[in-house]
Length: 220
Image 1 (cartoon, one colour):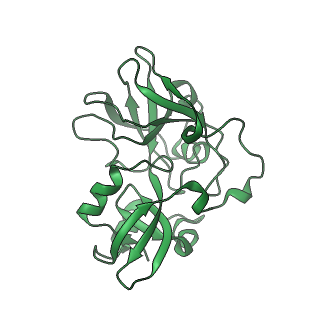
Image 2: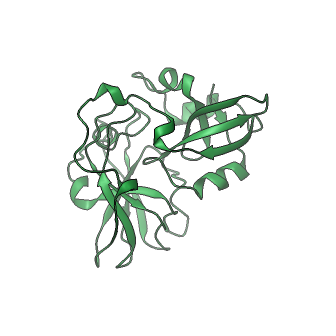
């Protein structure tokens, strides 16, 4: 059973880095004193590890359906983001490791003038995008060049190893100021997806009026 987060917990998670585009690996202390590992989608709904395959499997459930089925806030006492090494979801399906390192381990580089990035999301109300057109810290995106490899939402889901099988049809465009700090790496196989795309980690986000969209691409 998925669990909705409280407003305060959502606020806490959106101020912590993502594990990948649109999701975070977490550890939750529950109201019954149990401790569960799992994932949080869009910083607002928690799915325990043992329920992920059932809920997010081949016949995926839409994000709106997950929210509708989720328990109301109050079941989670505390929730913390954990490292990729603390939770392993479907990596063994693809044995060939991506060339290069993930963005989280890459050196910091600076963006160029008028450089453009893209963020693919299954969520129209992506919580990493603020109403003022800014990007929250710790958000992932990809380069404009790599985004040209993506024709459909399913392409994006596989190339960027997103957690959900739901097509990432919402495309946000990010044009940060020159010399914005980013880490650029390669998406590793994860969540039963091959990865292999370019991932860009905006550790400090991007200021207001730098994010537009979303545009919508075909699902498949």
